[in-house]
Image 1 (tube, rainbow over the protein chains, first blue to last red):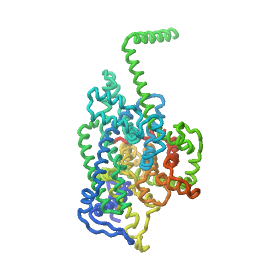
Image 2: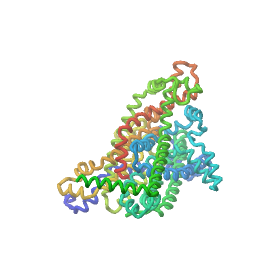
Image 3: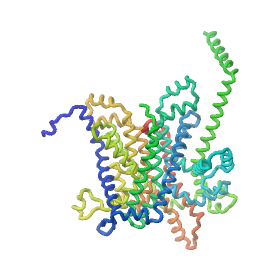
Image 4: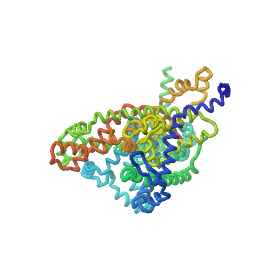
Length: 301
Length: 334
C-alpha cells in the first residue's frame, strides 16, 4: 500500500515506462539467449553425452578447442576459406549496393518495376535454394548450350577485356579480383538486396537543398556525389559492412560443418568449441572493419 | 491579354533559340542522353541477371523429359507439359506442406512483429542509466552467430521446462522437438530468427517520431498503452509492413532452425532438399526398373524449388509497392 504512494514526477515516469515494453524481449534475452550462451561456453569445455534421461557433462578442459584447431583435418581450412570469401565479397557487395541504390534513386520510366526486380533477391535469397541450386545439371546444360562457359553464370566473354586491362598496366591481382567479381555477379547481386534498401533509405533522407546549392555553385554530378552523397551516406556504409559480414557468414561452409559435427557425428562439445572459435574470429574481423571505417565516417549532426 | 501571351511565347522561343545556338547546350544534352543510354543498359542487365534463374527454372520445369536429351532444345521446350508440377504436387503432398508453412510463417510473423514493436518502442523511449547497455544487448544478439547457441537451444527445447514447474507436475520435462512450439516461444519472446534486426529497425523508426505527439496524448488523458496503440502504432505502419514481410520470408526460407527442430514435419525448405529422394521412391514403387537419372532429378529439383518460391513471388507481386515505399519511409537508417 505504501509503495503505491510513492509518486514519481512525469519525467521519471517517462524514463521508466519503456521498461514495460521491453519486458517480453528481455525475458527472451535472458532465457533464450543469455542462458544458452553460457551453456554453450560450458559445453565447449566439456564432453557432452546424450542419454535417455537427458545428458551428462564431463569436464574436458581445453581438449575440444585443441581438437578443433589441431586435430580436425578440415576445420581450420574451412574457417580460413569462409573468412577469405567474406573478405573478398563484402567490399564488392557494399560497392555494388551503393551503386545500385544511387541508380535506383534517380527518376526514370519504369522505376517502380526496376525496384521490384532489384529487391526480388531479398525475398528469394535463402540457404536452401542456394544449396539446391549448386550442382544443378539441367541448368548447367542449358547454360553451356547457350554458349556460356561451364561456370554457373559467366555471361561475359571477359578474356579480351582482361587482356586489355593487363596490357594497359593494371596490376594482375586487381584484374583477377574484378574478373572474379564479374564471374560471381549473380551471387553478389543476390546478397545485396537488404543493403540496397538501407542505402536507398539513406539517400532519400539527404535533403535536396544540398544538391541544389552545389549545383548553383557549379558542381558537376560527379563532384556532388563525392562531396555530398558519399559523406552523408558514410554512416550507412559502416552499417552495411557489418550487416554484409554477418549475413555472409551465416551460410558459410563453417556453419555447415559446425552443424554437421553436432547433429551428424554427435560431438556436441567439439561443435560448441568450433562455434566459439568462429564467433571470436568474426568478432575480430568486425572489430577491424569497424575500426578502419569508423575513422572515415562523417556524421552530419 | 492576347498580345501579352503572344509576346510571352515569342520571348520564350527566342530564349530557347539563343540557348540552342551555344555548343554547351548541345554538349550537356548529349551527356544527358549518353547517361540515359548507359543507365538503361545497366538496369536491363542487372534485372536480367536477377530474373534469369527464375525464367530458367520455369522453362526447365515445363519441359517434357524427352526435351532434355534433345540437343536442339535449349530454352523453349518442344513438348510442353505440366507433368513435372503434377508429379511434385502429388508425391510431395504440396498442399499440406504449403498450408503447414503458411501457418507456421504467419504465426511467427505476427508474434515476432508484436514483440519487436513493443521492444523497439521501449528502447526508443528509455533514457535512464544502463538503457544504452540494454540496447547493446540487442546488437549483441545480432552479432552472435546462431550456431554458437545452437546446441544449448536444441537441448533446452528437447528438455523443455519453465523453472522446474513442468517436471514438478508431469515428472519429466517436455520434449518440444518436432513441434511448432519452439518457433512460437522464441518469436513471442523476441529471440527468433534475426529478431535483433527487427528491434533495431523499430527503434530507429520510433526515434524519428517526435515525443510531442505522445505528450499531447497524455495531456488529453490517455494512458501509456492507450497512447501506444492509438497514436504510435498507426504511425508505424510502414515499419510494421517491412518487418512483417521480412519476418515471413525469412521464416519461410529458413533451413537452419527448421532443419534442426522440425525433422518430420513437412515444411517448404525441407521439402525442397528432400524432393528427389521422395520422387524416386515413388517412381520405383510404380516401376522397379526406374533408374536414377541425374538430369531428370535436377529437373524435379527445379520444379520443387519453383513451387517453393512461387507463393512468395505471388505475395511479393501484391505487396511490393507497399514494401519498397515503406522501406524508404521506415528509415532503416543507422
